[in-house]
Image (cartoon, rainbow, N blue to C red):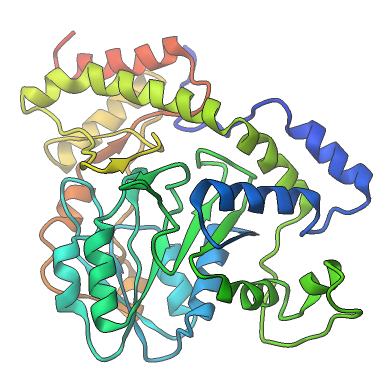
Length: 379
């Protein structure tokens, strides 16, 4: 029986050509031809003032935390239902993560609970666009403006998704993308930071280049570079950027492939939803998602466990997702939950992510659908 993996890293066929070109150019460290091409593509697609590739979305978020001046004693509001990097970036600066409950329909932070979590120590709000479906950004930006807070979008899953016509990651003060191998567009390990205001760009370049003004040197703006600020090494190599460039050139093909699979799942499972057997992803009005993932919600944890086990027996790898951060040892140490956990834990225990990747075989998609219908007694 052929195994159906949960994820297969995207490959469009031109990656090695561009990587070879980067090698032949004699410059394989960052900020060369392919880094610039990727940055420009992201700026054009998102309308951000500046976009800079980074070594990961984690590092993009760390860079954002530094740019926002996050320091010891500050508090940063975020959902507990997210990857550890969302919190790590701020915890490393000495801040406390303040977790807020999620909406059960989108799995995103409940915008109506944010204001109650604000204290005189709050410095930023970090909305996480789960599955490439936007948080309610109008409300979040309104709250941030009222209390003079930064908004740093965790748009790790949000490339090519939008909210009311605005690209995710380019709505708040800063946004962070992931190009990990599990994402729609990949460079193996990598990410990007988007800046709404150009005034942050020079400082961001300096921090990401180990605290030096090396980027200005390479552009010929200064005759030598030096250490001017505390920084780190957040700049990916040209080899990674060349790999990503191939994928960005085929971004629409990847988007269309994934969306086709997403819609097949939705259509196939709609009768189960209408019968009250499962729940499907909800896309609010004004939100355009990117088919980053397709999940279903089972009745409870026990049913989810049985379903994942059943699919595994059929050679299909389906997975659950985040364990809420506030229940983790580090979450208890470095954060606190504001209010009541009504949905975060309960909804996280019901969610199952199905195989979905660029170029997924139609027969494999059909196998996944048939297996789930069999599990629920429809076949």
